[in-house]
Image (cartoon, rainbow, N blue to C red; front, side):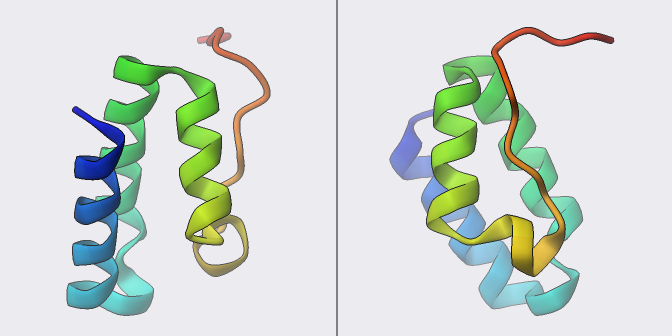
Length: 66
């Protein structure tokens, strides 16, 4: 996945589902994190204000604790 593709998918989810888009956005962000790392994930969270709108917090690092 590219960053542009991720942006399009997030925009589409927001347009289609509005305030209920969080599960679809989560799927996109998980793929972004896997493919491109935490920096790209955090860039999208900031760009779309996902923390405030959908309670999706930025990541602290590229390493998972799970």
